[in-house]
Structure formats: C-alpha cells, structure tokens
Image 1: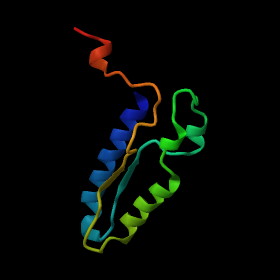
Image 2 (image 1 turned 90 degrees about the horizontal axis):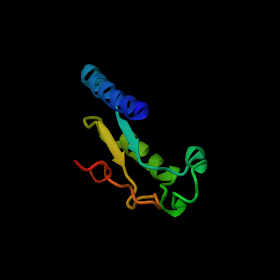
Image 3 (image 1 turned 90 degrees about the vertical axis):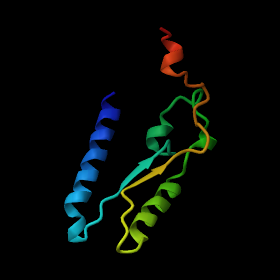
Length: 101
C-alpha cells in the first residue's frame, strides 16, 4: 500500500510541477515502467515469475530517449511502458473474487 500511495503522490507532484514550470520552458515527464529485469526483480521467486516476459532496461531507455527528443513545443507528461504479457506465473485473482459479498 505504501508503494502505491507514494507512486500516486509522485504522479500528482509531477503534474503540478509541469503546470508550474511549463511557461519557463522546463519539461517534466513521468516514466511509469512495468515489471523490468533489474536487480530488484532478480530477487523474486522464480516459481512466480516468467523471466522471458520481463521488460528490458533498454525498453525503458527508449521511453526516456523519446521524452528527451520530442520537439521543443511538446511535453510527454506521462509515459506508461507496460509488459505486453503478465510476467506472473500465478494468476492474480481480482479482489472481488477473493472477497465475494
């Protein structure tokens, strides 16, 4: 819950910063990556994750490069880079199915 709350707070901060800085010519972009092959995901249980479905850091680098190379009069405020297929081997059961009324 803490991670999700902080992520949403950072998104709100980024949007506010964009509106404050845009007339000064300063761009602000949030890159929102999905599950990426990093040291963090390397510690995950291999029984629950499919490594071949993890994004590479190069995919995130391309998103950053895109944000840096758009024309001067354009600002990509948010870029979501999501895994095409879920990397989780165990199906994630929606909350509603776990806790029926």
